Image (cartoon, rainbow, N blue to C red; front, top):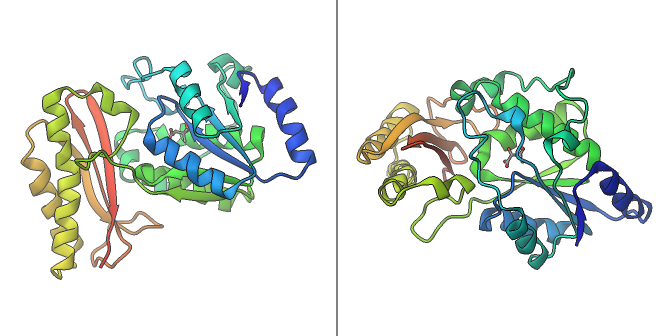
Length: 282
Ligand code: PAF
């Protein structure tokens, strides 16, 4: 596995890959690798001939007061996990290496879909995400890039950026990977105390209740939203930010819910912000 802490090593390492015409797959991450990331690595390996992973905790996507400084980082462990899982290259630049000219003058405007759901509570977040993803796409020029369904809004926005800016990258969405009891894997789960960890399951339970009500014939977006609230409220350590049933592409709230709609939820659990979602089947 090639270790690339710099853009220089990255471009030298990718030159022969491009010359040979190998299909390059990229899994962008912020590190603290877990099975969710590794499942994307597995998917990428099936679909590409050279598999690259980036690890970069991107300051542009953290707002003031968010958890940038305490975001978990464990590079050696990450590199071992990625090597064992068959990654061909890992790019892990410092902030100075990623943004050598300091603050960027030109950034990506993520547009109206970024104002919904998480965007309401994290102003500027998706601009930061799309800007770093665009930069990674520029550095790697991958044919395919993989993102997890857990960050559903992020994946929709990346797809839209690729489409609107003709970036020519196939964006593949990997399914949510969960703990045995249903908690969606996240690097931030490490911050949860035992009690918080127990209450965090309320998000998943809320989504399951929505699915159940939908199967029983409830098609009202508002009522299904209330089903979600009621379940989340049973968990006192959860402070709900939003719970909505939205269109899978536009992220607009749905009055009438159809299969394929996305139930999306975000809450603080103690000091940790958690998100989860579920694509309704029916
Ligand atoms: O999902 C993440 O880990 C990050 O938002 C990403 C896509 C790597 C951009 O920093």
